[in-house]
Length: 256
Image 1 (cartoon, helix red, strand yellow):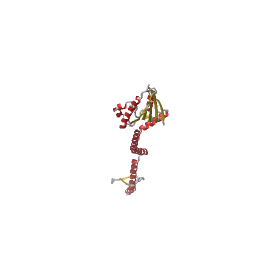
Image 2 (cartoon, rainbow, N blue to C red):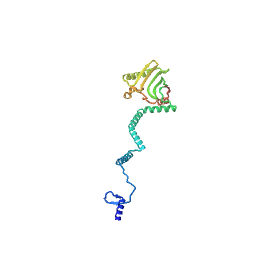
Image 3 (cartoon, rainbow, N blue to C red):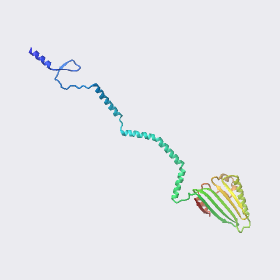
Image 4 (tube, one colour):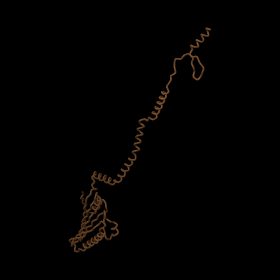
């Protein structure tokens, strides 16, 4: 009897541990560590924070990348404007190229002491004599920046002191009057004036090279014998001066 009671006491004192998922009862030594219980609400909050953190990390872009994207965007927006400005600049450059070239040329000539690009008038004179006639050629040229625009040639035929026949003056006058008639009937940029006296005959020939009709002159060459224009529009006055001086003319410029 005593043994039975002792066994019962031992069984009562020994705690019973129930293993989950089984109905068997196992005797074990008491354990002081108790399992921690996490409330469901706290678990959800933790999970939500983890997801938010993950999303924040995915959405975070380094500052350098953002700057590069912004810069790229600005460049793309600026390209059309830059191209338009470039096209306008090229168009203006081509349009004003003659003026730019002229300005640079003038600057370089002035810097180097060259004055052949100035504007003004040039007078050239040539005198000669034959047995019966003294004649003088007076040429006057108007030019702009050394480019010929108009001219006047005055031919003075004077009988020499020893001359006894003035028929040569009559012949020169008839040629001048014939030329004048042709020019008065046709506006070709050229005019003529004639005068004669007992001892002197004068022919004045004016040419506006900007209006001169060389086709008409070529087709009617017989009317212009002795009066054919030797020069042309925008010809270098320096070149004309050199040619005339080589032929015995004396030239003088009056520049503005």
